[in-house]
Image (cartoon, rainbow, N blue to C red; front, side, top):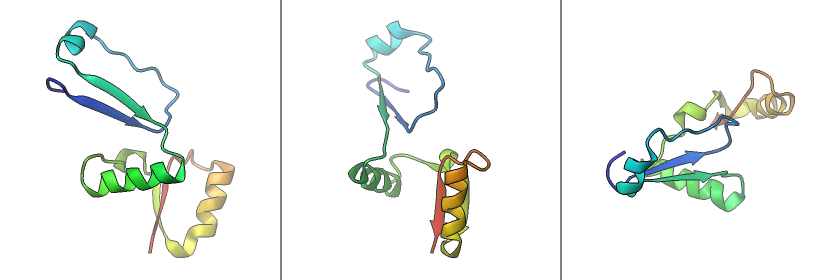
Length: 91
């Protein structure tokens, strides 16, 4: 992260975040921001940011399924099969 840089965290990991050198990050005015991202208006905001290339959600996508498998995707989320983080439905 450069001077005045921002790190945006999206979602919940349950893992600790460590800043190894808070003096440098403070001096360079760096920021760490988090975003739960679950309210409908926030999902819209995240899609907009991803569409503009401002953030990438690729690492949080567990699987991409055809739209015809939407009921299967919902069931996977409900049962937490394979520890799904984010399932994407492709039209």
